[in-house]
Image 1 (cartoon, rainbow, N blue to C red):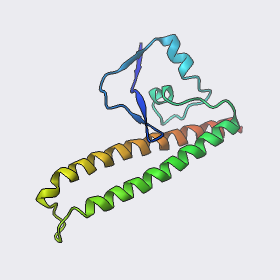
Image 2 (image 1 turned 90 degrees about the horizontal axis):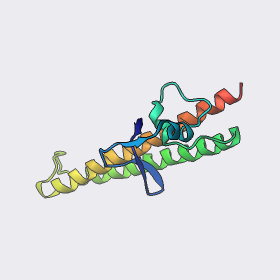
Image 3 (image 1 turned 90 degrees about the vertical axis):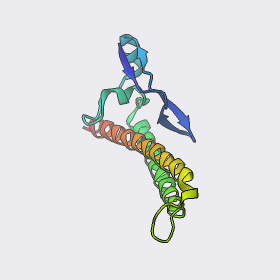
Length: 136
């Protein structure tokens, strides 16, 4: 049996679940879920279990563009988060004692945003590879 990290929707984007439990899939079920004709060689096999395979090159192009848009949005959210983190510091760049818990929250938020960005960047790469292979 294979396992994959579960994902959940957060602000309309798939992110890895906080749960550390693995979901077990039957081999035959996994084959149906991961019905990709061409898989990017640098992306783990388990990633494709979380990503809907394209039905055509046009579908892959649309999905790739949507994931590119998501990456740009994550970049903006990360930038805003970093600005907010900077506002919690004193003139010497040190976190003020009464802002430490908020800083911890923002660091956790940044990690979640980076994980979401990584997911969408890998999805973009997966659809790009599909398009490249299907055009030959």
